[in-house]
Length: 194
Length: 370
Image (cartoon, one colour):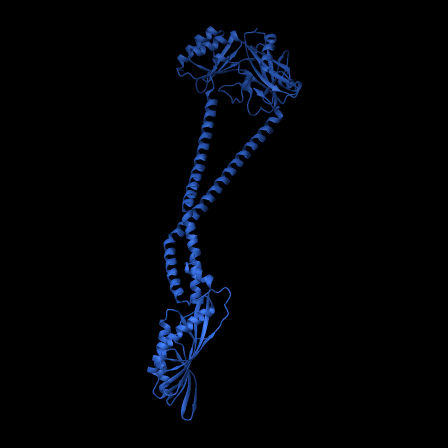
């Protein structure tokens, strides 16, 4: 039998070798466990990601439907906006439309005074106001209101003051607001926000 | 089964539980005859492994020292044997090599091949398997004395003292004259001295770490157990590695599969992301439109007022509040009670103030149109 290590050191050496072997084995097991756990965590994260992705894809058709409806609404609102190259042009066009509605209703326009408003920076929709002073019967006034409500462009009655005048006449003071889009915003909505 | 060979004796032990101590004859020829007869008589037909121990009388022991730098120790021992062997070149030998700091110490047991060969041939001829051929003193080693420095006294033609240190034979001495165990212990500075007659009893005492196997190579059987053990360990390692590989591979396959599915979904996910952005932008636009508000239903209000206000009431003014959206009515009536009743019909109307003057009640009403 051949011994490379002197007898008195053999036991110590054996213990050291055993300890090193056990330590090596433990390190190996720890390394493998860590790697396995890391891979397991990665898999769980990926599966979670997949679950979320599939859930999102499930909403795709609903989202497309929602966007279609939004586009339709935007188109309808866009049509109700006044259109023109400048605020002055828009005000002029609004006066023409209101004059036409007044004539149709038979109301007497005593004055139509456009009020220039400053464009609000950043806001997509800008208002223009027309101050009206009218006279006529209540029936004529109702016809005018009906015409405003039924107009292609949207006009909002913001201020109104009605007083009796003569026996069957009314004096009407009205703030009528129309809306237009600034050029860049109009461009965006016209293409559906793309 | 253990077989002891001493000077002019063959002893057999452990054939059956309880053991036998038999003198099987002084020569190998007698041994063969008597061994066969003995096994027949005792119906020992099942051939078991036999371990043979040779008495120290039949063995030559020596220690040689070689330089540390000896390139081929086996060759050096073989060269020394020619000079040392009392049995000539054709002898059996077993050695134990210890590498010291500066030298290599070799303990050697030598036996006469011609003496032992007929016994070995007889046993193998009868179909018995020989597991080893050891010096009898090796039976004295056990767990208790492995770490001690002790002596083993064997009797025969001459008394011989084998000195063990830490389980290894350090020396063998021939004793002469009168002596007792205590004297030997003191003289050779030993922890204890034992007589081989006390140790080598039947049935076999526990033996650990037998050394100096003198059995010739031609009688040795390959120790398959070692290779079997290596094979099993290797097989286990392979299975463990295969199992680990399969586990990791399975996990990696699942990860790859999920990644592939995610990659396949990526274009659709980007589409969803794009659509969500578009939806957000469009919602902002619609929010802007919604902030404009709606027109109050003035036609309905005028109709309701015309229908519900009593004949005795007269409206002086109808005013739409720009900020609150409320409609304020001012007028006068002769009968406030009827007017109050009719207010319920107008809807969300509240009487804000009244003032009585010149037989008329002047009123102010606030209406919140639908």
